Image 1: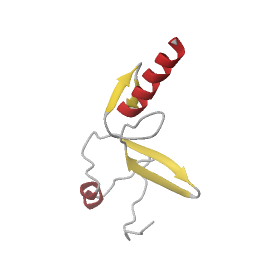
Image 2 (image 1 turned 180 degrees about the horizontal axis):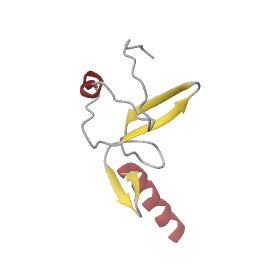
Image 3 (image 1 turned 60 degrees about the vertical axis):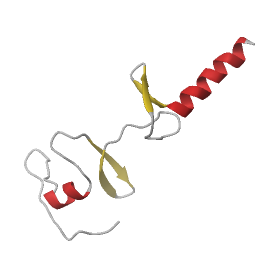
Length: 86
């Protein structure tokens, strides 16, 4: 990870402001969802991108029962269903 040299303090509710330069760099706008996770001893904030629940792809997603599945995985599932019918 690369340090930006920017330091921010948490407010009384635990919030921190992400500087506009960083938001612009990662194309994060107001109301965009962000993902927060822990990586070792670091807290990572990342712009949320929906992805396939099976392979993690972010391309050609379809929604099935409120889950995101890429076209390739949905075709594999369809093929499994066809194989089971035989």
